[in-house]
Length: 234
Image (spheres, rainbow, N blue to C red):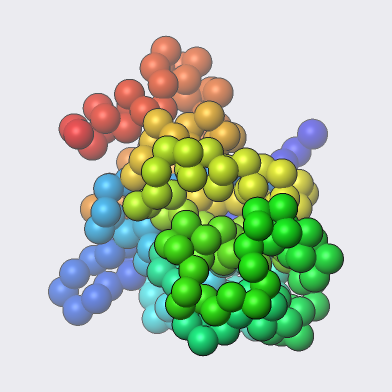
């Protein structure tokens, strides 16, 4: 059965002055896959995700989500977890849930409440009073409680301990829309490899390797982590 494309990229280039953050990227990503966007810090991962999320709109080349150029239509399809906190410090978990419920038509309030209860997050505690781990869990819950076509996670496991990483992946695997595509940006390959269907290696803004994880492992007889270390000479 032919796979359906969710993200199509042609000759995508993004410059910041004289610096080229993304350089002539061409790739297709398919529906229903968990994709690892892998590379060291500063390689262009966040820039790529921000273009997908329509937070950066000055670039060369073409990119589409479900056949649509990034814009209002694609924002309704995409659930995005940035690499920094996005909830105002004075908000409570309940206020954040109420905002998402009002702002996103695909937001499942019942699911969000169930998850914060399961993870013992006080719905009336202000965001600024929460621990770093609780803040990350709450924001992840909000993103996963949308019935999106494409989920974007920018470095969701950076700066958290191994136990918390396992919980984050468990939450993602159990709660995302299974017909959707998930893109996880990270440089921590060992932790993420076990859940990936597809990988994109990004180095200095250039895609150096991409494809189906099982096919890559079979062809190379190497793990994704080992290939990453070789390709990036870590």
